[in-house]
Length: 93
Image 1 (cartoon, rainbow, N blue to C red):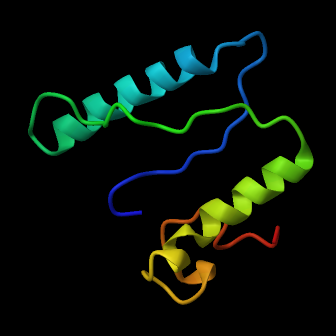
Image 2: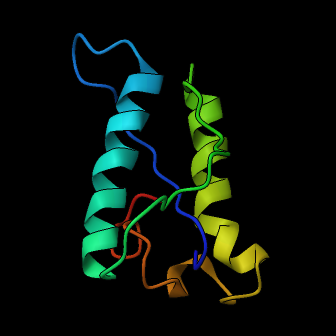
């Protein structure tokens, strides 16, 4: 998406804090983005929707939401047309 990202990942073995993991990801990516954009300061908005997926049905629903987000936003006609999707070239769906 042009103004936000969606990420689905598995916490590393022994890592039990989603908040710590997300802080680390956001800190690193903000630093890299600021370097690339030759800027400083806050990059990510404070608001986020972080949560742990507890079963396969919820995972499936979230994957479908994420891949169809560009379609729902009117950016493409079908999710396979969104060039930034990691699922674009996979036969998973």
